[in-house]
Image (cartoon, rainbow, N blue to C red):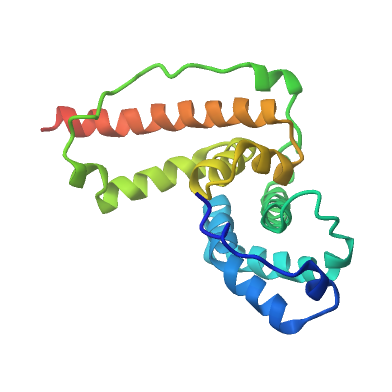
Length: 197
């Protein structure tokens, strides 16, 4: 469950420029927005830029917020767009949109490693968590952002679709591809740990 779902905000107060209400909004969503930026970009300075730009744009455009989605979904949409823009600035040669047919191609992992019997401390070790973070960061951008919003931040499929302006089917497809990709990457890592025991 999303850690910020319990927060209620007055849209009217935000639109009227109520600084205290905006400060509450920033306090409630700073951590998840920063975390999303950090996991998308892998860099603290860039994550701080995403955080700052997200709230600046929210402040500038709150008057246009129509409440068709939740306030949190709207903030995640701004943050995801900010992170993706930074990624594209760093790698302008990467196409913004891949062919639509690629979403239909779900490649199955070539290796499944059963790590269910591994000790929990091995699975949750600092090295294991670092490897998971590296694997997430290695995901293609469009898969990474869906995985982070759905599986890390706890948004629903519908909220993720709204935040990224995608269909629910596209979110499910990309989420499946992200999970399979991560399972394969982690399978290689844990296979080495199992065989070295």
